[in-house]
Image 1 (cartoon, rainbow, N blue to C red):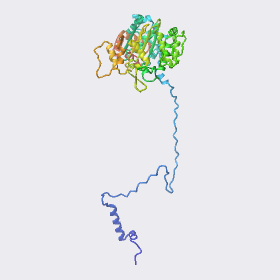
Image 2 (image 1 turned 45 degrees about the vertical axis):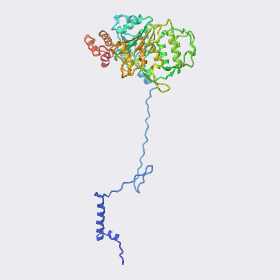
Image 3 (image 1 turned 45 degrees about the horizontal axis):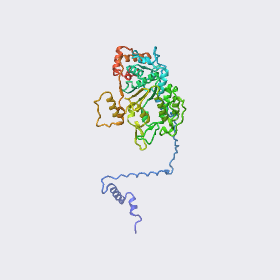
Image 4 (image 1 turned 90 degrees about the vertical axis):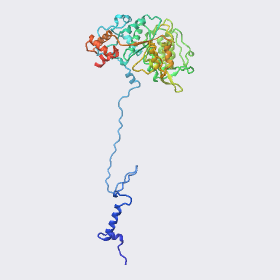
Length: 476
């Protein structure tokens, strides 16, 4: 008769021989592997993660918790955003008066006679209110010049100031063309301002391009004047309109001058689709105002205004430009084939450089002044070579490892351009300006010969910018 218990049931019963044999066999099989010496660990297999998008299944009896998700609160920007052009206006804002500064007693105003007087050298003279308005209209003041530290605008009469005053007095119908060079802070831009102030006092017409960089950095719209000409010249309508506005505000003498050569026909201005007719007795100020309000015809009206200003019997002209190096290289503009446009192809720059080179004449006389900048100066080897040779150093020749632009060298090849290097002021002039700072309350140390000599030496031999930094800006 067969047994009621099978072998598996007999192995499960404790205390039996079969159970002990089954246990030894099982342990030996689990502890010894045929191809590995590592003992096997009995680890629970990892749990499978629930697929995304499906809720995780909870075991029966498990406690389920509900959490409320917080919504992300979008923070609204409550600050007022600056309007278009507001930051640029704040960056270029010029303060010309400080009511907290002391008023300098006995401060005299400049005049044509005092500027020529040799006894005025080394003195600080105030700028009259009317001339201040004219200089502000042509953007002659710069934000970094420190005009807001004093009660009213004033300028130091240095040796070069008297030279320009006497030059303007005996100029007649001659033309002076100069390029001002010098180290940073030597007073090149202020010298342009003093020249413009003297021109306003003498009744000249002043046309100033305050920053040549604004013409070439690609911030104004441009269009070809005549697409069929080679090379193509491009006009900048908005900038020309703003320039006409500055000319009208800064030169009140234009209200007394009338249109003498009649209104041109539209065909005489290539690239202009329409040109309004003007009455014969219109003033030049009104003519410039029409161009300022109509940018499409601004360049054509600028040419008409210039034609009237060089007519016989008109006052002399003073043309100024700051940042000459920016006009001697490629601009940020592109032509129809996406090739860079050279700065000489821009109409206003071409017009100014035509007078500087002598290609365009000033029949009634005048001056053409251009200043370089050491703080914002692109590297132009052609300009540096030309200015070095014009200073009298003819030993400097072309470097075979550098590229030179013949268009830039051609501006100075015709001769007649002078290079004036602006250096430091003398000790007497430094003493005069330090006494003015002490009278204004911004310099509290005593002005003695020892102090003047020390500050003059520290400032690199009287460099005005360094002198003001050492005496005023570092002690405020």
